[in-house]
Image (cartoon, rainbow, N blue to C red; front, side):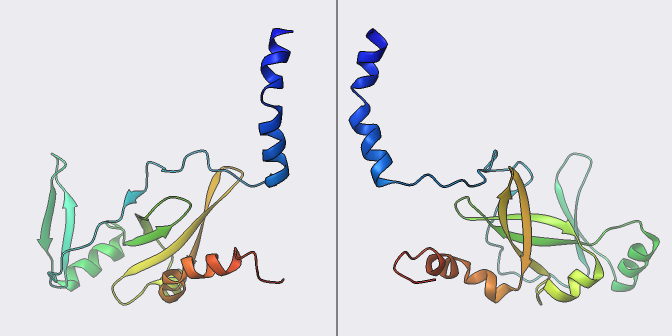
Length: 156
């Protein structure tokens, strides 16, 4: 009886919520900030010469070294090094995240811009992140497209 009287006090609130809002089934991310995503940080304006590579030494310090392009190509052909591309990602979180991905040649031709960057959006399906690669100009206008799609005053 005590529990019933406590719950009865909330009936009006629950009725208002039920009348004013619709519950929509959607995939909710289990982890809105996956550990492999880093927050995007603006890069310095200084332009490094072609052939500059970055690596971490045995003490986890970021180091830079310049290699001639021919030597870089030899390393890539031998399989001793992987080419990673910086991917900027928009998703259900605030701001932009970034990751480094190894990409197949056909994807590089389609999606890598002149600075060597790739752009993606992330949506969660059944709690798992799904990434969709896009062209830069479409990626930059993602927020505008979403606001148009979510506008309630537009017809189908």
